[in-house]
Length: 97
Image (cartoon, rainbow, N blue to C red; front, side, top):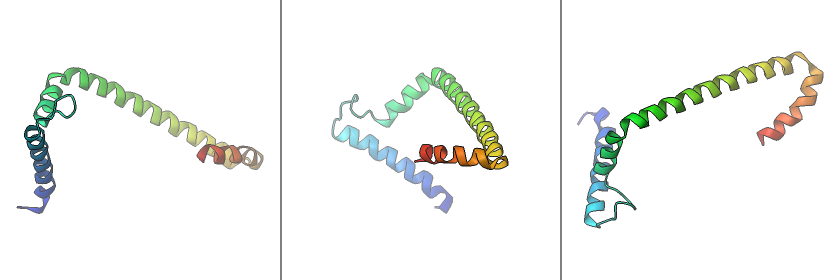
């Protein structure tokens, strides 16, 4: 087996093991559903999942962009003024911890 396929084979083996354990021990599906049911539910609900995933991605990207802008702005301010640096730096250390 080519070395690049080993991780994929491990994932498939783990899903098969999960399926077998659920069936062998007659696990109630509300405790641990088999992967076949999980994949079926993902396929059934793919449209709302993708819609919500898109909204989550948008929110994450916008939040990350705002954090970058705020960090750059604060970095420029702190780097350009020693007095502001000495005033704000202890607060930043407090937030960091």
